Image (cartoon, rainbow, N blue to C red):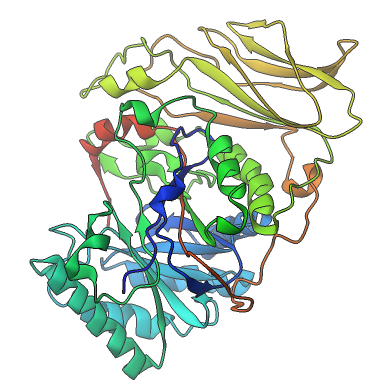
Length: 474
């Protein structure tokens, strides 16, 4: 029987409203809360074992318990998986497969899944399990053109999945926790889905379309969406997923853009609007809410830290040499510098000043806890300065200048953390939110779900870049 329908949530920089109505209230046993990160194998093909290990170390640091590996079907992937699992073994870090159904929609795909992917890796010590079952997810699979084995209907595809799970049980002696990603909720109510063996469903597109009013209130709303999820208490889902950690092609990434990163090539190389756009500050900030979500206890801020972010060009800026031109969806953006300021009790911090156009504004009052601050930007130098009541600076740095035009349209965000060497242990308490990623103990009867966390750094421009985007598989 179909499991609970998954809702959507935005991360820092995103404006997607979360609605708990997306969760079907099915009473099923689940494990303790976990957080997953969707990792795009196709865009890290030149990574070394050390690169993967470094990203896993960052994931552990911020409380992401396992990776959902976006698994495709191309010649070099088995070698890549060897490196990923070698890093997972070194770091004691779990991973599981999220089959990208844009690649597994051809004849014999399920046979390759069984023998070349699951038989090889699902018994690995670091393959992630829930309630003793190996976890399998997907990207898509509910629309024509994404059905397993290239069949013609959703019902046929469901039958193929059930047959695959039966083979996993009989040949590998493993049970499956199946949580597919569907791009629309309709299959879950379809009679054709009634017999599909699944434990949860993950709705990747649980938000409005590009430029729709439901998609935009403010670029700082990610914090509010995550907090709303936390405030659901016992009704909150048991598992959430960051979408994604390394999707350079759509600029929805949290991990560092390394020299070995492999952005998709197309009409305009993705690297030209990803290089230099560091999003690691979003990852570090997520640690605060990850800890809160998993423990139910808001972390204590232990030292001052500022996370701030902005785009490089104003909305009315025009690219000077872009064959595609500016997307109309950029009109939904706001020319704003945003900051999230964490202040401990007893701090001398009084105001955060934001520089735009080379001039600091009049300052924004801050107090203990989490403070959201923003100011309109204009062309010129940027920066922040956290000061005490006497005007003495406690923290400060400068960012990338705002320019009128760029060569290609660039709506990606630059993000910063101050102090630059801040890590979660330096600015917050840890109440035990890190979980045993392989543990299956402690069930409770609530709806299971995966909630998408999508960085919005360039979400509103996705339509434009889909025109020029292709994965480089060689």
